[in-house]
Image (cartoon, rainbow, N blue to C red; front, side):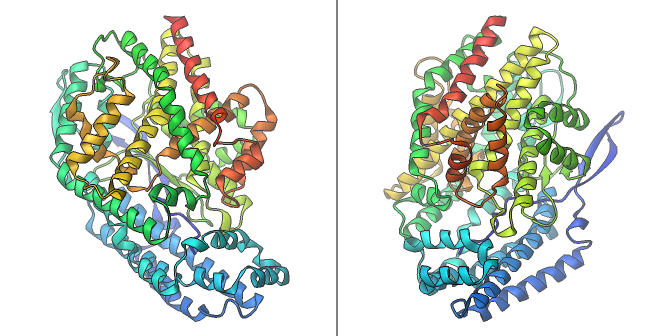
Length: 617
């Protein structure tokens, strides 16, 4: 039986204000972990207690089939230990994410990972035992004991997994191997966030910057083209120095995934990962087919970008700067909160009340700092506390968009946790990213509508196009890369840094129209694969692309005033993990992601955005 909660960088945040620099006061939020455990000593006590409870789970082994009460007692204790383990893990993962250079935080995180490995091992017998008890007897137990209803979906999922569930001894061995199989992601994190010596460059105006993970995201959009080229050349040459080591790390990740799929009798890694969420394989193949058929539309955007930037020979480092230069002001946290709330008014009162409550709390770790984990995330894994948001806020429009995105996740968790027991509160990424991406779309339309000039409107229209480029096309390109490298491994081909670069270069060039003269891809930039953390998340990225498709499907109707579709979307979010995500979307809203029609709204949106831009030029 799989863990009840998917853990994904969880955090608790409290806010404060202080000065940075010499003259500017900026509101910043740094998390305070005392809401989870008041002190490290209390976390240590909790870790000891959880490890004791994990050890104690063995007494339930062989008892689940004795009676309905025995099954309830065993599963309730299993659920309790899961929930407490998540709380222990959250505390230490947040401490590590705040500063991955801190040895003691690294050590605590290692102890938490070991705890979860022990938990997997200690519970590896549950699924085989349930399958031996059998569907008939368990259904009888459900009739006798109504309290078992919280575990109904988990049991149904266990039955579905029967062909891929091994005997008790083998399951125990696989559980013991869990830490080893997940090591590549840990190695990548250490490389990317702590070990790589980031270079310092001097930009055209004399500004000296260190090209870390976070600052690269800011300076790759520099207005000066020579600066952008310098940023790209320096950043990717730095990654290239580690390409062999990162190649070995990614190859180990791929081989781990191949091993896991084969040992569990799946047809392949892709089938294995889609199976986990009950997703029809047609969703993946339909997405890739629709994106590849739409590449001419993407090339239209790239050509429009070149025209607006006044660049005849568009290059990869010309992707990120805004299409127009305009002073939109500073989008600090206060302004980001105010605008996001206004933009999301189409959601209605239920959603906005939850958002207002969350924004009134201090749940964010907001700004970059040395050693901090890059990127942004939300985690709602501590069921009985609240969701938490990590940002690397740069006080620009892109940061505000990320702010809206992550708060979409937070409200999703609030809705799910409110409407589901712990056992089915954890939801799939497949629906999670729709909950966040739709916020970005509503924010874009709000900013376009309220733009103070044509130039500002062009800026926001261009940002909306960039979202589609980055989420629909780029993430599908990543998905094709991930599929290609796993298929290569399954065919027995050796995987190395140069091999990854070769595969990635072909995709970069095909997607961006290199051979058609749309955009030139320099070979030096094809090492970008080494930079992408999501390649260590097992076929995770394609869900960004399906999510912007689903979000566009909902938003198109939201913005047309369809209250029924809005309410259906709230039901989707409130359903949490009570069913497989494809079923939830289909049953609650009528959205079928296996069909081409599901992808038409995002393509219509892209065409509309370009039409609106061209009308202003």
